[in-house]
Image 1 (cartoon, rainbow, N blue to C red):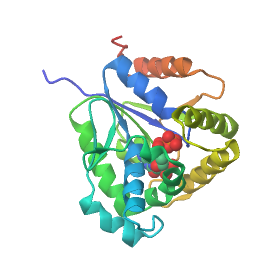
Image 2 (spheres, rainbow, N blue to C red; image 1 turned 120 degrees about the vertical axis):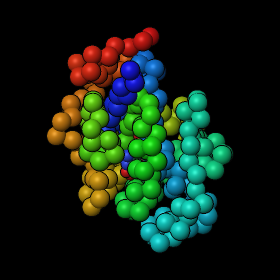
Image 3 (cartoon, protein in one colour; image 1 turned 180 degrees about the vertical axis):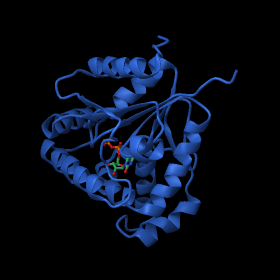
Image 4 (cartoon, rainbow, N blue to C red; image 1 turned 90 degrees about the horizontal axis):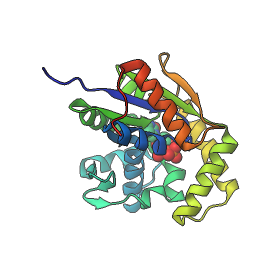
Amino acid sequence: MEEKHISVAIDGPAAAGKSTVARRVAERLSFTYIDTGAMYRAVTLACIRAGLDPKDEGQAVSLLPSIQIEFDEAGRTLLNGEDVSEQIRQPLVSGNVSYIAAMKPIRLALVEMQRKMADSRSVVMDGRDIGTYVLPNAEVKVFQIASVETRAIRRYEENLQKGIPTSLEEVAADVRKRDYIDSHREFAPLKPAPDSVLLDTSFLSIEDSVEAVLRIVHEKTGVSPSC
Ligand code: CDP
């Protein structure tokens, strides 16, 4: 009998800790983790490197045919074969990614790639529109939130650890700006799917958030962690 693939969609606003939680949930379930935000970030980086304006749809879209985005086994983001996992976290990319992500032709191209990635295997995919648009039939949908203050502090501390120079004020402003653009764009905006489970992680540790998502996965599918 063919094995059934399971999709876990984790959506939510900027810096809510989705990628850390999603990566660990995927590890525990032996599913593949797909960071869709990294894909929008890679397009943004390519645009900046090419000297193009990330707010200009015509310029950004002209790059699409020359861009290939993949993830290696370790989950690193490859842009035309080059590991750009660190560069895509730089403030210049964070500050421009939501303009790129609001462009419909770019979303359509990346969504097609994301659906293909989830086609033949069980995945944990995180982003903004996974439960509403990319994988509307996902067995599990989580909408992960936290207060703006908590999210800004988390991202600020993450940046410090990674050696990315930012101030708390800058990070908070970036988070607010991206939340606004992501939830007000016309095509596939950030919003909870009606059948998603809301998970407020403002007062939860990473481990508690991971356990909470694993409980939701178990309730919805009967699947338990393999490790
Ligand atoms: O990790 P963080 O919350 O900072 O953001 P991310 O997941 O890396 O996503 C970066 C940006 O890509 C978001 O602010 C959105 O503008 C866009 N994005 C999107 O539009 N749709 C997705 N499925 C994932 C990300």
